[in-house]
Image 1 (cartoon, rainbow, N blue to C red):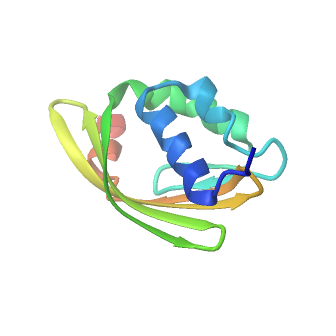
Image 2: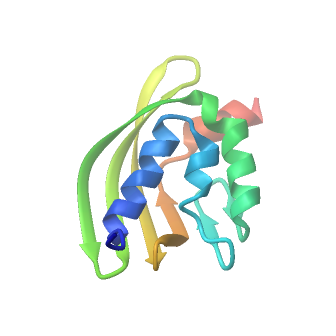
Image 3: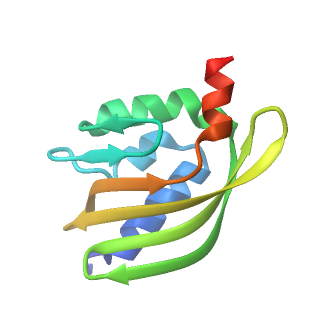
Length: 122
């Protein structure tokens, strides 16, 4: 059995997130060193990150994949996250992941968090 490529690991993780199968998504994240950064949150622990995803996951309706760039163990995807807050919207997202072996050790996402912030500030 061959080792999955970094792109296969990241896309399997995104598949699990889109399916709202957060337990399965967790299997793609490193048990050791792991970091996550976004405009709204930061985590240094994969379990804490997944716990937060469980909390906000219900607003996710789907993920549109627009483009993938791969450089060695780095996978950068341009995505459209379909989310439902007051109405269904698509938020452009850049998702940059670093894979070590067959586990994601780092995820950084870039997006406009204005609507999300307004939802929690209200």
